[in-house]
Image 1 (cartoon, rainbow, N blue to C red):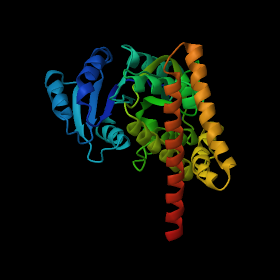
Image 2 (image 1 turned 135 degrees about the vertical axis):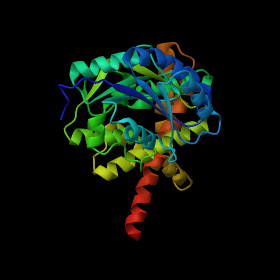
Image 3 (image 1 turned 120 degrees about the vertical axis):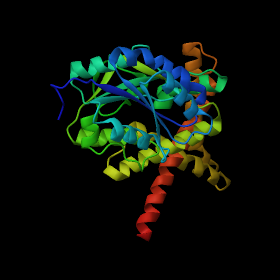
Image 4 (image 1 turned 90 degrees about the horizontal axis):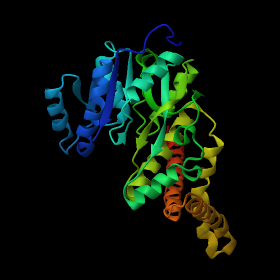
Length: 332
């Protein structure tokens, strides 16, 4: 399936976005030198921003014809990338997906294309380094960069370059993307893992590069973090249900969080009912203290709290999706 004899270029950059006025100009300007060197277009796909993002992109397009603006009425990132490939996929052999609220090394695009041409991979994925500014962001970043928050996920902690089954989406060949039908627009979260499942099933290969990475900035409030991971949990359950896949051990462990927290309510009948939830909280807090001491980072205990929010939200989202699926089956 791999296009071993075809070069990765011409390539386009695709930026799905919604209300990213604060970041958009700096992001596009950061990507422009690579776009010039590699002769790439920068396609910004806006999902109905109300903060002036489209106007910023239009102004950038006026000064640089490489910048293109598309309007995405479906709003979702999955639909945004599909739209860009539909509009420009006949012109470009590949694309690089860029997250609007992330940051990237200056040679990010160059390294991805080099890796694609060296390995002949159909998709090149990257590891994420999470960073924060506020106290809560720094604590959440600390959690997300640790096993407590990511379960040892390779695209979170990074690794030597290797063939993989999933990673943070970066470079992809248009032919492979189109062959499996692109992103499933029924997924608001976890659309990348769902697509990776279909790519692997169709015989396409994914390479996790160690030559570059992306920087991700976590949510700034507890509510926003909870909502994000609620969506992740729903997306993972939806993916598993769609493909009848078996969850990995690192995904099965957080599934127990909602049951043990709910079970703690039975403490009015028997005090022992609270023990599983207390054990979970103790393990998280203990890990946070261990990180604080080992890394000499005062945000360790707060990172434990962030991890607990992530665990609870992910677990709740997963179970809610399962219940929704069960209800639909019963009424069908």
